[in-house]
Image (spheres, rainbow, N blue to C red):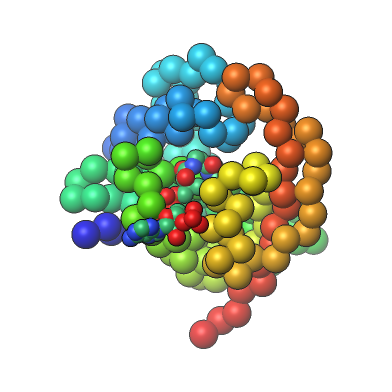
Length: 174
Ligand SMILES: CC(C)(COP(=O)(O)OP(=O)(O)OC[C@H]1O[C@@H](n2cnc3c(N)ncnc32)[C@H](O)[C@@H]1OP(=O)(O)O)[C@@H](O)C(=O)NCCC(=O)NCCS
C-alpha cells in the first residue's frame, strides 16, 4: 500500500536522508534532474535541506510517497512565483526510486500535487521534462498539455545534452 503525504518542514527535516536516497538513486540511474555525476548522498541531503527551508517559508510544497515507512518517491511544487502570477505553481523533482517504478507511484504523487496546488490557490501548473523519457508519457496520460520542445536545454548527469519538453495543466476545483 502506497501512502502519499505532504510533509511539513519538521517532517521534511526528519526524512532528509530518505529523500536524499531517492534523489541519489534517480541521478545514478541517469535522470536529468539538475545534477551532474558524481552526485553524493551529502549533495542530495544539502539539496533537500534547502527544500525543507523553503517548505518552512511556505514557498514550496513537498510530497513524499511511502511504501510502509520507506520513502520511495517525492515531488515538489515551487510556489515562489512573481507577484503577477499568484495563481501559478511550478512542479519539480518528480522522483521515484528505480526499485519502486511502474507501480503508479508517480501518478499518485502527481494527483496529490494537483490537490495540494489547488489547496494553495494555484490553478495553473507548469513543468518541464526530458523529451522522450518515461515522465513525458506520464504527463500526457495525466492530461497535461505539451507546449513544445527546447533542444539541448540541459545535460544528463554524464554530460550529454538532452532536449526538454514544456507542459502546463489548468486545474479545476471540484
Ligand atoms: C518518471 C518517473 C517519476 C515515473 O515513475 P513511476 O512511479 O514509475 O511512474 P508510474 O508507475 O506512474 O508510470 C510509469 C509506467 O508504469 C506503468 N504502470 C503504472 N502502474 C503499473 C502497474 N501496476 N503495472 C504495470 N505498469 C504500471 C504506467 O502505465 C507507465 O507506463 P509507460 O512508461 O509505458 O507510460 C520515474 O521513472 C523517475 O523517477 N524517473 C527519473 C526522474 C525523472 O525523470 N523525473 C521526471 C522529472 S520531470
